[in-house]
Image (cartoon, rainbow over the protein chains, first blue to last red):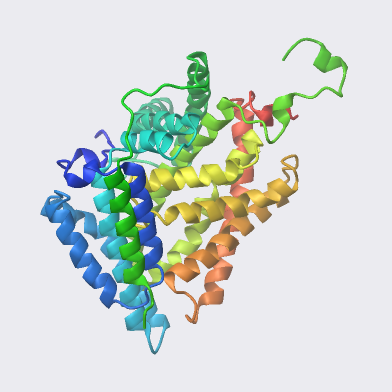
Length: 248
Length: 206
């Protein structure tokens, strides 16, 4: 069995200038861009924005070109589906609106890549706690849950191996590989879920026994919100709203 | 449980039974559910992407059949912890995990979708003051979750003006009722039977 692994994009890319931008402000700016784009119903503006973002990704963002192309595959699949459906179901303006939707998917996709490659999830959670004042119990529980998630593929394989031992070997497909039947898959997913729930109670107990949830908390290595973080955030948000505003 | 007082006098209730009293345990459970289901949803999106490529334009309709699957975590979280806001929180966390940690192509508007799905799914349980958990309530929960998210996705993807809007709505809501409602009911029952959630609100109500 090959080992499945989950890797975060930020570990694969050399941190660029965007990595220094405060994660919370970055997230809010990205959110504003994505929502502003919902009001654009023609393909020209998304196309220009896409070109700009790709240039930003390749220069400031340090995203390797090969990696950027690979990351486009799901967006292209998603976008082409949207395009085709609109062409087929809208007799008069399907091509135009379909292209607008596909373009929007690409722009949000590249913007998300820029965000993900420049933001370490741990930094983001700490920033959400310190700058946006989200409860520490929630952000740290998310990080604990994320660690748990990273261990899930291994858990899956252990339980699968036990399942095969008890059943006296796997059913084999025609090529001789072990086959995962539907009933087995159902049991496997359920067992993984139960193991996770049991572990969540254990996490809660250990957090509580270490005095978690007490106030006030002190912070090791605070994440600062500098004026330039905010200025950049306001500029990006205002520009994207102005850009997507239906002027005509 | 502190002593015999609780057993002899039925008037004294466990203060943590109130939907407004969150324990750290409840919060961690909801977060962990959100994380695990965030991963499952992400896998579901990958499956749907593959399906969409194979099916071509019909792949866009495939999402409606799977839609209920994205609603599963909210009734689970509400039924186990019985806390106000747990369903919304679980769905939003699942969306966060999908986007921030796993990189979903839908982008950060996924957070809004998560909020709407959670709101729709939690509403019937909130109306029952987090005390009634019959199968029909689960079905309504699945229906409302699917119904709320339908209009948001319709605006986002420009479904208005397409000839198949009603067909979309019907498949969408049926999937919500079956996958996001009835399936959740049986899943909660199976989880409860294993005994892992005995220390939560669901275990205290027998």
